[in-house]
Image 1 (spheres, rainbow, N blue to C red):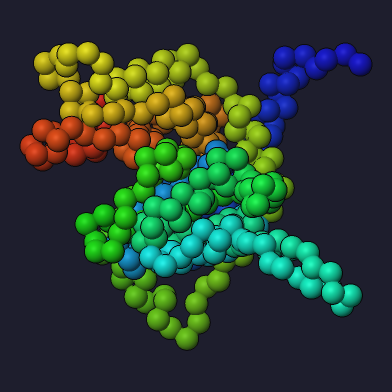
Image 2 (cartoon, rainbow, N blue to C red):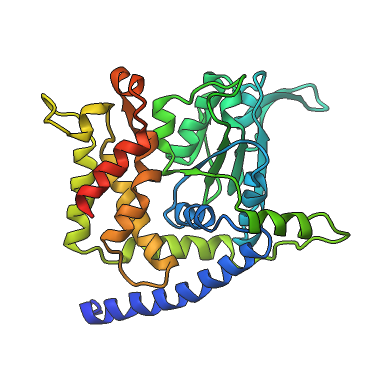
Length: 335
């Protein structure tokens, strides 16, 4: 059997991409009938899932973060489970545990009872209200798609995604997420207050006798096909160079140059940030009906990809400098 030619392979990818663009348009319409406004939040959540990653939704309570995750699960055809993180939550409450069963003949054996992590879309609600020990219970699952209990490996369903919600750290009763776990989140998605027109629509459409329910558009297997397609999309050299320039410029290296934004950075993003950008710019292009990403996609996704992978120096924080300010100055250089 002869290998397919490059032209045939390219044509196949283009045909698949064109079909995917139409399907994702229907997905966005289905979500928009249930989640009002927040177009950028919805887009970034879809980009996260198309890229095969996990997302961290950050915002105060009451901004429809839970509603968004539930809607995504229905529209994308993913079975969804929810964990409400609290200070007394234990790792076994997430992963599962072994219980001792006794048979009628008196013999005893251990049986593994799966925890809520065994699902395709896991909503970790208010993840930073649990202790660091419990938060870290998700690390192996998020990175390796399996958990180990009593020395035995248990694979998670595929696809497996975590969409976690986090309250602002200034609120009482919150614990900061460990840096290693933050890096496992492909993207940090900030959820802000709705504008006036959106909030008016929310008041009118969610307080009546009936309410619109989400409807399935995709299935889990189809989502995995789209994730495979994203990895086949071409990325131009200019986009690769922009990603490398952005990520590397966000790392402090040697004595800071005058007016260098990286002078405010205590530690910066690692190679995983560049990998995240390579995937997400492709997914964003697909969502917007394009067959290849451009530098504009890198600029648009710089903040959600980098902000949770950077920490500022004490001096910078004392001067009122924020991570977003630094990322904005860095992206301005490649714009």
